[in-house]
Length: 166
Image (tube, rainbow, N blue to C red; front, side, top):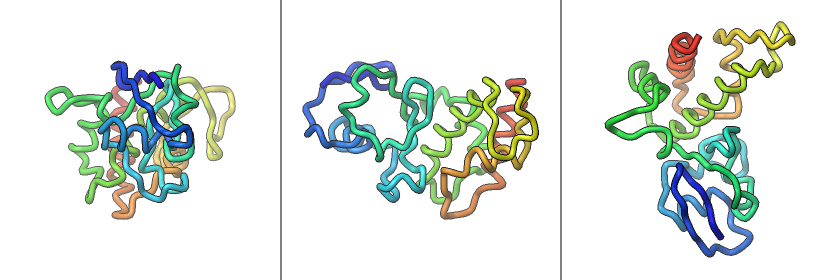
């Protein structure tokens, strides 16, 4: 099978039942995405597929051969961090760090969703004018669990990056 991940081309020959998460971690050595619950409940495995966030533990790798897949490794480098990665560092948006790759990938996609005017369950308006306040961010990030409870810092990091985009 052929995959485009973080802008690079990869060939792999996994079993057709292999999840996207296991392909990334076990076959390609891209271990940034974490296997937390392996049931789609924690969000530690969140990656971007064609710009949209998905739980990579819930989808088969074979379903994404023609997709553009972005993992935490593809967002930035240690010498050139993505703005969201920098904000997480500045705001101490992590403690143990296990959920951080999924949190950051989800936050990047969530801001794109908000920029496109997608409402959430707590959006007061449905006309495409989205304001990412703390309640809106918390709702939109609710699929990503942090067992250390760094939520206020995560919200602060996302708020900072959102403010820079506006």
